[in-house]
Image 1: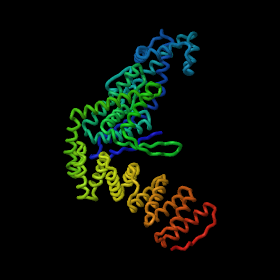
Image 2: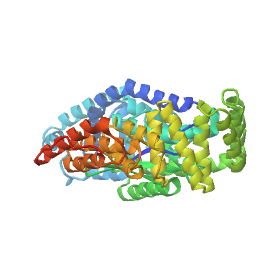
Image 3: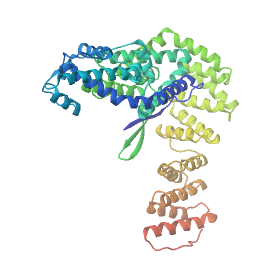
Image 4: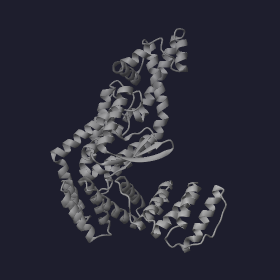
Length: 505
């Protein structure tokens, strides 16, 4: 299973309040509707199926009110379904269907009673049904439903998945387009995605709900706006979790092709509106191009710059504007000036984040790695562990190897706080290999040995590292008891003879 984790443009210039607001609104609507929808869904679905079957098998029966409207919609909008319901040789749907078939010829009055009961119940459920009122039904399309369906979700996984994709793609677009264009784009993309879904299955009587069409539009806009941005993915395979990065111009088109494939093969039978995703993505990309070419994006950027200049350092605001215009050298010069003036400030952290992206765009790998190293040091200093770990991963992915020994040791210690300590042990080992004659290298050997022995159940590796620490040229009299104890415990775990108190040179 592939899961998007983050991308290179996660940090913005302002709080993404619109994105937070959309997520909050979706969550509130879900909490207010989900339980009732779960209660309504099974019975309403069963009543609709029984109505279709009974009306198709007995066209002479009288059908009243809302139920007749529903039957007429099915007959005109989905003739294939109606024809299948009329087929006398079709499979029996359920026990009710079997009972009706047995009683059809002997008790015609029972058929009308069943129809009257179903019609009355349908009218009650239809009036109360949230999904029927506010979900988008292609066979009975309304503009209100196109909008309201975007804020309904079928379950927790549906909601959480959509909101996570919204956060990843939406926050950076809000930072780029501002708080007027961005929400307008979101709603337009959602409506257009719904229309594409309706065109792909115009006879459907099943309500379509969810924000995925609008979010697919954000993904299309992300591709147009940030094609070279690397997206970090997580891959769960055989109970192990792997991470890798892929540029948006590879990853997002692959996702689109997957949706086209599923939509072509499975149509609407999978229960997922694949063509809504395709439509949202394509229209999102086209609208993003139009926004950029029309000059609206430049107008929005100017307004954002005027507002952030009051709350951020002028050099940071100017550099952001220059980077947006492609003036990378001028932006880098302003950022370097800022970090020299205020080396330990929050503005300096933002400056290093921007610098590493600029150096990457320019293809200056040494400067990119240097900026990542300095950013990591600042994040560690401000206790931003999550940020430091992400920056370290970026550093490794870009080919970085050697960090300053003290910074590297602190980072590995912080990595120990994560559920999976194997990366910390590997980091300690690498540090010890790079700095064999430094105190930090010795401490790293001991720490890696401890993790292998106590946390990872690898006593042979622990013994190897404790033995290397014992043979280290770094003076270690004060640490000798710890090393001896580690060697003894590792040997004991391996079933080897224990000897302690090895002399120290």
